[in-house]
Image (tube, rainbow, N blue to C red):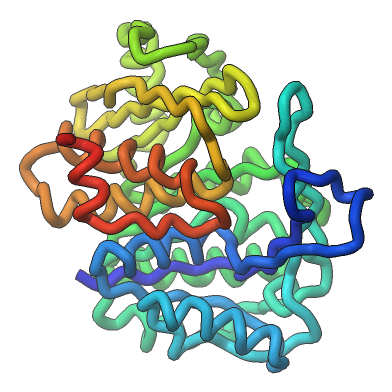
Length: 337
Protein backbone atom coordinates (compact mmCIF):
# COMPACT_ATOMS: atom_id res chain seq x y z
CA UNK A 1 0.00 0.00 0.00
CA UNK A 2 1.28 3.45 -0.92
CA UNK A 3 -0.07 6.53 0.85
CA UNK A 4 0.44 10.15 -0.22
CA UNK A 5 -0.10 12.97 2.27
CA UNK A 6 -0.29 16.66 1.38
CA UNK A 7 -0.01 19.76 3.55
CA UNK A 8 2.20 22.47 4.99
CA UNK A 9 5.32 21.59 6.97
CA UNK A 10 5.71 23.95 9.92
CA UNK A 11 8.46 24.91 12.30
CA UNK A 12 7.17 24.93 15.87
CA UNK A 13 8.69 27.20 18.52
CA UNK A 14 8.17 26.89 22.28
CA UNK A 15 9.85 28.09 25.43
CA UNK A 16 11.42 25.34 27.58
CA UNK A 17 10.06 24.19 30.94
CA UNK A 18 6.48 25.40 30.27
CA UNK A 19 7.53 29.03 30.27
CA UNK A 20 5.11 31.48 28.71
CA UNK A 21 6.05 32.95 25.34
CA UNK A 22 6.84 36.29 27.00
CA UNK A 23 9.31 34.67 29.41
CA UNK A 24 12.93 33.66 28.99
CA UNK A 25 15.32 34.25 26.14
CA UNK A 26 15.49 30.84 24.42
CA UNK A 27 13.15 28.94 22.10
CA UNK A 28 13.18 25.24 21.30
CA UNK A 29 12.12 24.24 17.77
CA UNK A 30 10.60 21.15 16.18
CA UNK A 31 9.15 20.40 12.75
CA UNK A 32 5.52 19.38 12.47
CA UNK A 33 2.17 19.99 10.81
CA UNK A 34 -0.87 17.72 10.51
CA UNK A 35 -0.16 15.89 7.25
CA UNK A 36 3.55 15.59 8.03
CA UNK A 37 2.59 14.12 11.41
CA UNK A 38 0.42 11.52 9.69
CA UNK A 39 3.26 10.70 7.30
CA UNK A 40 5.77 10.19 10.12
CA UNK A 41 3.32 7.99 12.02
CA UNK A 42 2.77 5.83 8.94
CA UNK A 43 6.50 5.57 8.22
CA UNK A 44 7.20 4.59 11.83
CA UNK A 45 4.60 1.84 11.46
CA UNK A 46 6.35 0.56 8.33
CA UNK A 47 4.11 1.97 5.60
CA UNK A 48 5.24 3.33 2.23
CA UNK A 49 4.35 7.02 2.53
CA UNK A 50 5.15 10.05 0.40
CA UNK A 51 4.77 13.59 1.73
CA UNK A 52 4.01 16.49 -0.61
CA UNK A 53 4.54 20.12 0.36
CA UNK A 54 6.27 23.29 -0.81
CA UNK A 55 9.27 24.51 1.16
CA UNK A 56 11.66 27.42 0.70
CA UNK A 57 14.89 26.57 -1.08
CA UNK A 58 16.89 27.48 2.04
CA UNK A 59 18.78 25.53 4.71
CA UNK A 60 15.69 25.71 6.94
CA UNK A 61 13.47 24.27 4.22
CA UNK A 62 15.90 21.50 3.33
CA UNK A 63 16.40 20.67 7.01
CA UNK A 64 12.64 20.15 7.34
CA UNK A 65 12.56 17.71 4.43
CA UNK A 66 15.65 15.97 5.80
CA UNK A 67 13.98 15.59 9.20
CA UNK A 68 11.09 13.70 7.60
CA UNK A 69 13.36 11.65 5.34
CA UNK A 70 15.40 10.51 8.34
CA UNK A 71 12.17 9.17 9.83
CA UNK A 72 11.41 7.11 6.73
CA UNK A 73 9.12 9.45 4.79
CA UNK A 74 9.62 9.78 1.02
CA UNK A 75 10.28 13.49 0.39
CA UNK A 76 11.55 13.13 -3.18
CA UNK A 77 8.57 15.06 -4.59
CA UNK A 78 8.79 18.04 -2.22
CA UNK A 79 8.53 21.28 -4.21
CA UNK A 80 11.01 24.07 -3.42
CA UNK A 81 10.32 27.77 -3.86
CA UNK A 82 8.97 30.79 -2.04
CA UNK A 83 10.54 32.85 0.70
CA UNK A 84 9.95 31.23 4.10
CA UNK A 85 8.66 28.26 6.04
CA UNK A 86 5.40 28.58 7.96
CA UNK A 87 5.79 28.66 11.74
CA UNK A 88 3.70 28.45 14.86
CA UNK A 89 4.36 29.26 18.49
CA UNK A 90 3.07 26.84 21.11
CA UNK A 91 2.62 27.65 24.78
CA UNK A 92 1.72 24.45 26.65
CA UNK A 93 -1.03 24.28 29.24
CA UNK A 94 -0.14 24.33 32.90
CA UNK A 95 -2.58 23.97 35.79
CA UNK A 96 -5.60 26.17 35.08
CA UNK A 97 -3.78 27.93 32.20
CA UNK A 98 -4.92 26.77 28.77
CA UNK A 99 -2.53 26.03 25.93
CA UNK A 100 -1.98 28.75 23.35
CA UNK A 101 -1.13 28.52 19.62
CA UNK A 102 -0.05 31.51 17.53
CA UNK A 103 0.33 30.97 13.77
CA UNK A 104 2.74 32.82 11.47
CA UNK A 105 2.00 31.36 8.04
CA UNK A 106 1.20 34.29 5.75
CA UNK A 107 3.36 34.43 2.61
CA UNK A 108 5.04 31.12 3.38
CA UNK A 109 6.19 28.84 0.58
CA UNK A 110 2.98 26.83 1.00
CA UNK A 111 0.79 29.96 1.24
CA UNK A 112 1.92 30.87 -2.28
CA UNK A 113 1.32 27.39 -3.71
CA UNK A 114 -0.82 27.47 -6.88
CA UNK A 115 -2.60 24.92 -9.08
CA UNK A 116 -0.34 23.42 -11.71
CA UNK A 117 2.81 23.54 -9.58
CA UNK A 118 2.65 19.92 -8.39
CA UNK A 119 2.66 17.02 -10.92
CA UNK A 120 -0.18 15.16 -9.24
CA UNK A 121 -0.73 12.54 -11.93
CA UNK A 122 2.88 11.43 -11.69
CA UNK A 123 2.87 11.44 -7.87
CA UNK A 124 -0.47 9.64 -7.51
CA UNK A 125 0.13 7.15 -10.32
CA UNK A 126 0.66 4.16 -8.00
CA UNK A 127 -0.97 5.54 -4.84
CA UNK A 128 -3.69 3.69 -2.93
CA UNK A 129 -4.67 6.45 -0.48
CA UNK A 130 -4.47 10.24 -0.63
CA UNK A 131 -4.53 11.92 2.80
CA UNK A 132 -5.39 15.60 3.16
CA UNK A 133 -6.93 17.89 5.78
CA UNK A 134 -8.99 21.05 6.10
CA UNK A 135 -5.86 23.00 6.96
CA UNK A 136 -4.64 22.67 3.37
CA UNK A 137 -7.55 24.83 2.19
CA UNK A 138 -7.46 27.28 5.12
CA UNK A 139 -4.15 29.03 4.46
CA UNK A 140 -4.87 31.03 1.29
CA UNK A 141 -7.14 31.03 -1.75
CA UNK A 142 -4.40 29.78 -4.05
CA UNK A 143 -3.50 26.96 -1.65
CA UNK A 144 -7.19 26.02 -1.47
CA UNK A 145 -7.35 25.95 -5.28
CA UNK A 146 -4.27 23.70 -5.34
CA UNK A 147 -5.93 21.40 -2.78
CA UNK A 148 -9.09 21.02 -4.85
CA UNK A 149 -6.94 20.38 -7.91
CA UNK A 150 -5.32 17.47 -6.06
CA UNK A 151 -8.68 16.16 -4.84
CA UNK A 152 -10.16 16.28 -8.34
CA UNK A 153 -7.23 14.39 -9.85
CA UNK A 154 -7.20 11.78 -7.04
CA UNK A 155 -10.94 11.27 -7.51
CA UNK A 156 -10.55 10.96 -11.29
CA UNK A 157 -7.79 8.36 -10.79
CA UNK A 158 -9.96 6.28 -8.46
CA UNK A 159 -7.71 6.75 -5.42
CA UNK A 160 -9.22 6.40 -1.94
CA UNK A 161 -9.33 9.85 -0.33
CA UNK A 162 -8.85 10.18 3.41
CA UNK A 163 -9.69 13.48 5.11
CA UNK A 164 -9.13 15.10 8.51
CA UNK A 165 -11.45 18.04 9.19
CA UNK A 166 -8.74 19.88 11.18
CA UNK A 167 -10.82 23.04 11.53
CA UNK A 168 -8.62 25.89 12.80
CA UNK A 169 -10.75 29.02 12.97
CA UNK A 170 -7.72 31.31 13.33
CA UNK A 171 -6.43 30.30 9.90
CA UNK A 172 -9.46 31.17 7.75
CA UNK A 173 -8.60 34.78 6.99
CA UNK A 174 -8.78 35.11 3.20
CA UNK A 175 -12.56 35.34 2.85
CA UNK A 176 -13.67 31.78 2.18
CA UNK A 177 -16.56 30.26 4.14
CA UNK A 178 -14.86 27.48 6.15
CA UNK A 179 -18.01 25.40 6.63
CA UNK A 180 -18.86 25.50 2.93
CA UNK A 181 -15.27 24.74 1.90
CA UNK A 182 -14.90 21.85 4.34
CA UNK A 183 -18.26 20.49 3.18
CA UNK A 184 -17.06 20.49 -0.44
CA UNK A 185 -13.94 18.63 0.63
CA UNK A 186 -15.96 16.08 2.59
CA UNK A 187 -18.15 15.37 -0.42
CA UNK A 188 -15.08 14.11 -2.32
CA UNK A 189 -13.78 11.78 0.40
CA UNK A 190 -14.15 8.09 1.27
CA UNK A 191 -13.09 8.17 4.93
CA UNK A 192 -12.61 10.97 7.44
CA UNK A 193 -11.54 11.86 10.96
CA UNK A 194 -12.42 14.77 13.22
CA UNK A 195 -12.99 15.52 16.86
CA UNK A 196 -16.54 15.97 18.13
CA UNK A 197 -16.23 19.77 18.12
CA UNK A 198 -15.25 19.72 14.43
CA UNK A 199 -18.13 17.36 13.63
CA UNK A 200 -20.47 19.82 15.35
CA UNK A 201 -19.05 22.75 13.37
CA UNK A 202 -19.46 21.04 10.00
CA UNK A 203 -22.88 19.51 10.66
CA UNK A 204 -24.31 22.17 13.01
CA UNK A 205 -25.58 19.25 15.10
CA UNK A 206 -25.02 19.63 18.88
CA UNK A 207 -22.67 16.99 20.27
CA UNK A 208 -23.65 14.76 23.18
CA UNK A 209 -21.44 15.70 26.15
CA UNK A 210 -18.22 13.77 26.75
CA UNK A 211 -17.32 14.52 30.37
CA UNK A 212 -15.33 11.42 31.29
CA UNK A 213 -13.04 11.79 34.27
CA UNK A 214 -11.96 8.14 34.16
CA UNK A 215 -12.41 5.00 32.08
CA UNK A 216 -15.84 4.11 33.52
CA UNK A 217 -17.73 6.80 31.56
CA UNK A 218 -20.74 5.54 29.58
CA UNK A 219 -21.33 6.95 26.09
CA UNK A 220 -24.75 8.00 24.76
CA UNK A 221 -24.53 5.66 21.79
CA UNK A 222 -28.10 6.09 20.54
CA UNK A 223 -27.55 9.83 20.11
CA UNK A 224 -24.26 9.28 18.31
CA UNK A 225 -25.84 6.69 15.99
CA UNK A 226 -28.54 9.18 15.02
CA UNK A 227 -25.86 11.80 14.37
CA UNK A 228 -23.76 9.52 12.16
CA UNK A 229 -26.77 8.33 10.20
CA UNK A 230 -27.68 11.97 9.55
CA UNK A 231 -24.14 12.74 8.41
CA UNK A 232 -23.99 9.76 6.09
CA UNK A 233 -27.29 10.75 4.50
CA UNK A 234 -25.76 14.15 3.72
CA UNK A 235 -22.41 12.75 2.51
CA UNK A 236 -23.26 9.32 1.05
CA UNK A 237 -19.82 8.79 -0.50
CA UNK A 238 -18.21 8.76 2.96
CA UNK A 239 -18.33 5.16 4.17
CA UNK A 240 -16.03 5.43 7.20
CA UNK A 241 -16.45 8.19 9.82
CA UNK A 242 -14.04 8.49 12.75
CA UNK A 243 -14.78 10.78 15.68
CA UNK A 244 -12.28 11.43 18.46
CA UNK A 245 -13.24 12.84 21.85
CA UNK A 246 -11.06 14.34 24.54
CA UNK A 247 -12.02 15.63 27.96
CA UNK A 248 -9.42 17.81 29.69
CA UNK A 249 -9.78 17.03 33.39
CA UNK A 250 -6.80 19.30 34.02
CA UNK A 251 -3.73 20.32 32.00
CA UNK A 252 -1.92 17.03 32.70
CA UNK A 253 -4.93 14.71 32.94
CA UNK A 254 -6.97 13.91 29.83
CA UNK A 255 -9.44 11.19 28.87
CA UNK A 256 -9.84 9.96 25.28
CA UNK A 257 -12.20 7.81 23.33
CA UNK A 258 -13.26 7.41 19.70
CA UNK A 259 -16.14 6.17 17.57
CA UNK A 260 -16.10 4.49 14.16
CA UNK A 261 -19.18 4.52 11.93
CA UNK A 262 -18.37 2.16 9.09
CA UNK A 263 -20.92 1.19 6.46
CA UNK A 264 -23.81 1.37 8.92
CA UNK A 265 -22.04 -0.18 11.91
CA UNK A 266 -21.17 2.00 14.93
CA UNK A 267 -18.30 0.99 17.20
CA UNK A 268 -16.78 2.58 20.31
CA UNK A 269 -13.23 2.32 21.61
CA UNK A 270 -12.73 2.06 25.38
CA UNK A 271 -12.30 5.32 27.28
CA UNK A 272 -8.58 5.80 27.97
CA UNK A 273 -7.46 7.65 31.10
CA UNK A 274 -4.16 9.57 30.62
CA UNK A 275 -3.09 11.03 33.99
CA UNK A 276 0.30 12.41 32.88
CA UNK A 277 0.06 14.20 29.52
CA UNK A 278 3.45 15.27 28.14
CA UNK A 279 2.42 16.86 24.80
CA UNK A 280 -1.13 16.74 23.33
CA UNK A 281 -0.18 18.17 19.91
CA UNK A 282 -0.68 15.78 17.00
CA UNK A 283 -2.92 13.29 18.81
CA UNK A 284 -5.53 13.29 16.04
CA UNK A 285 -2.80 12.86 13.42
CA UNK A 286 -1.45 9.87 15.35
CA UNK A 287 -4.95 8.40 15.33
CA UNK A 288 -5.36 8.90 11.57
CA UNK A 289 -1.97 7.42 10.73
CA UNK A 290 -2.59 4.40 12.94
CA UNK A 291 -6.05 3.89 11.46
CA UNK A 292 -4.75 3.80 7.89
CA UNK A 293 -2.14 1.26 9.00
CA UNK A 294 -4.68 -0.77 11.00
CA UNK A 295 -7.00 -1.05 8.00
CA UNK A 296 -4.22 -2.92 6.20
CA UNK A 297 -3.07 -5.22 8.99
CA UNK A 298 -6.53 -5.94 10.49
CA UNK A 299 -8.70 -5.78 7.34
CA UNK A 300 -11.57 -7.86 8.76
CA UNK A 301 -11.71 -6.50 12.33
CA UNK A 302 -13.10 -2.97 12.59
CA UNK A 303 -13.11 -3.00 16.38
CA UNK A 304 -9.42 -3.83 16.44
CA UNK A 305 -8.75 -1.06 13.88
CA UNK A 306 -10.48 1.45 16.17
CA UNK A 307 -8.86 0.27 19.41
CA UNK A 308 -5.43 0.21 17.79
CA UNK A 309 -5.86 3.77 16.50
CA UNK A 310 -6.99 5.11 19.87
CA UNK A 311 -4.05 3.41 21.59
CA UNK A 312 -1.64 5.14 19.19
CA UNK A 313 -3.34 8.47 19.90
CA UNK A 314 -3.08 7.90 23.64
CA UNK A 315 0.63 7.08 23.34
CA UNK A 316 1.24 10.30 21.39
CA UNK A 317 0.27 12.24 24.54
CA UNK A 318 3.45 10.87 26.14
CA UNK A 319 5.83 11.99 23.37
CA UNK A 320 7.19 15.58 23.07
CA UNK A 321 6.80 17.29 19.70
CA UNK A 322 4.27 16.89 16.88
CA UNK A 323 5.33 13.42 15.72
CA UNK A 324 4.08 10.11 17.10
CA UNK A 325 7.11 7.84 17.15
CA UNK A 326 5.34 4.80 18.63
CA UNK A 327 6.11 1.54 16.84
CA UNK A 328 3.61 -1.19 16.03
CA UNK A 329 5.10 -3.37 18.77
CA UNK A 330 4.73 -0.60 21.37
CA UNK A 331 1.11 0.03 20.39
CA UNK A 332 0.31 -3.68 20.60
CA UNK A 333 2.02 -3.98 24.00
CA UNK A 334 -0.18 -1.20 25.41
CA UNK A 335 -3.32 -2.47 23.66
CA UNK A 336 -2.96 -6.02 24.97
CA UNK A 337 -0.64 -5.50 27.95
